[in-house]
Length: 361
Image (cartoon, rainbow, N blue to C red; front, side, top):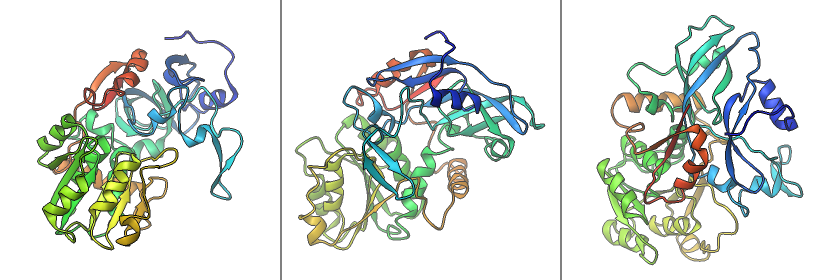
C-alpha cells in the first residue's frame, strides 16, 4: 500500500473533503493499473455519520472496463454532456486516479447526528475504508436483521439493477419461459428475480461450464454455449419459435446480445442489462432483429423504470432475500485484504476460476 502524501489531485481533494473517501482506498491509476492508497479522514460535518467499511465487492463488468492501457470505457475517451445527454469527442470525462465502486457494507463508528455506533449499513460507496453519509441515508440503509453482511454488499445497487431489469419486462415473462445470457453475478440475480416474478422456466446461458454449474446449484436450467455453439437455435428448438417472450442479456457481450435477439419470439423483447463497449461487430441488426421486429430495451440503473424508485427496488430485494427467493451472499466470492486490490482485479480476468471478489478492511 502506498504511503499518504500531502499533495492531492483536485478531484481527489474534493472527495476527501466531502468524506466520500478516506483511509485505505482502491485506485485505478493512469495506464489502467490498480493500487491501494491511504487518504486522510476529515472531520465529520453536522448531520453526518462515519462508516467504516467491512467489505466492498468489485463490479466485474463496469470496473473492469477501466483497466489496462487500452481500457475501453467510454468515459475515458469522451465527455458526457448532461444538458444535451450525449457523449462529445474531446477530453476524457474522468481523471486519474479513478476511485470507483458501488457494492459496499460497513458499520457506523462515529456520529454527529445521534445514530448509534455499531449500526450496520449498506450502500453504494467506493472501495474505501471510511465514508461519511448523511444520517437520513444511513438510517434508510440499515442492514435488516436476519441479513448477513455478505447479503448487504449488494443491497445498495447491484441487486436493484436486477430488479430494475425485470421491471423493464413488465409482465411479459409471467407464466412463460425466460432466458438470461450471462451467468455472472448480475445474470444470476436477474434470473432469480425473473423466477420470483412469475417466469415459468428460467434458463441461463453461459460460455463457461463453471458458471453454468453455479446457476444449476440455484435450481436454474442452463445451456452451456462455448464459442461456436448456437444457443439461440438450441433454445428455439426447446421452447418453439414463439416460446420465449423475453430474454435478458447480462454479460455485456455484443455477441451474446445478438444471440438474445435471435432467441425471443417474433415481436419479443430483449432487456439489455450489460455495459457494452466499443463497436459491436457481432451485432447484426439486419438479421433476426429486423425480421422478427424484436424490441430492445436498455436497463441501465441510471434510468430507473418510471414506476419504480431506488428505494422501492431496494425494498423488493430485501423482501426476496428475506423470503429465501434471492441468493446474494451465498454466491461464490473470493475475499482479499484491500491491500491486495490488484490481485483481486487480476483474479477476475480468470472468470472460470473467480466468480466475484470482495475486499476486507
